[in-house]
Length: 405
Image (cartoon, rainbow, N blue to C red; front, side):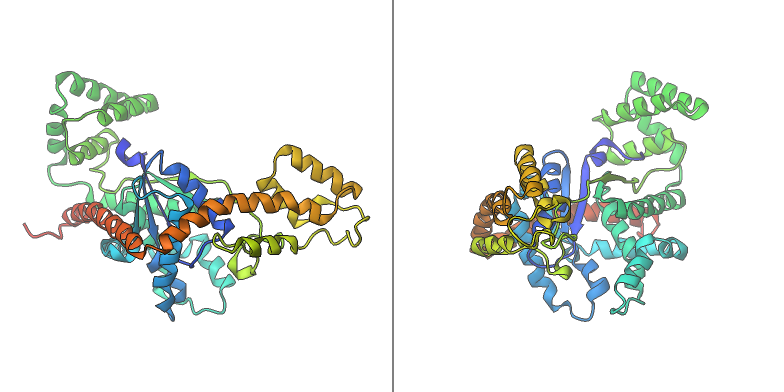
């Protein structure tokens, strides 16, 4: 992977603002973010420009939806001290990088992204014959490359977007990475490592370039990672020198595959607002209990004495998320033998969901009561994000000779 360790340790992920979040978002995205924020340098952003790609006709709901979503992030435990939280449109460098990348990205690359035609089929009621919709995977690439993210958490259906980003970065580096005097600058950077390390670097470089020795490549990368007396630009030159290319301006990211959410909706389908089968993180506990008590079960169980099949019951999917092995065994036995009724079966699920939601809702109330605090958190995050974005866009401008000297 063409990236230094500090970039390998950086993660970028975003969510389109849809208002208050539900249990599907919590289990599918937020629980993963909660772990990542302690393992990586994380940038989590509100993808409000991405929301415009399909809802450009009525953007008025986006600000409120963004605020409500951020409150749920914070309530779920996303820590602004551990991760940078920001709003995409508050970092205008994203738009500039998207524009500059669009100059070198072949049209066919965008047209072949699998989700392009899939979404057009699914969203036939919307007019998606716009460049914004065609180009949204490239805007995603700009989001990722702006922060030189080494890892991008995605599900299987989004891997193609990360691969597009890798191709765009590779093309950009190929076109603009061969700066004038590249080899001389790389040799000068190598000398700053000291004679011993420079000699070792040369040896490892030869083994990789002449013999294809992957182990030598990894050792050389580790050697460069450990150099505290060379600049980031010099380190990137040496990575490019090592791998036989130019200076790496935009490192290629890797897809960090996340497990598909096992959180079902109330009807057994995927939990989604469009299916009207959700439990929101801030739903009133009494309403949550009522909703779960009345959710559908195995249609074969018309009477209390009728045996059922947990595999045909949406409640069973909730047990798989919230119940212990012991409780799951109790459900399997009791349902199939009609030893327990459906309301009895739902009780552990109700207790499990409420236990999960209570601390989230307590924190949400605190943030709802302090809008200035939420605003301050996002302002600080946007500033931190802009600092990084400015550095990247300056490098890109210099590489493309867009800066007057």
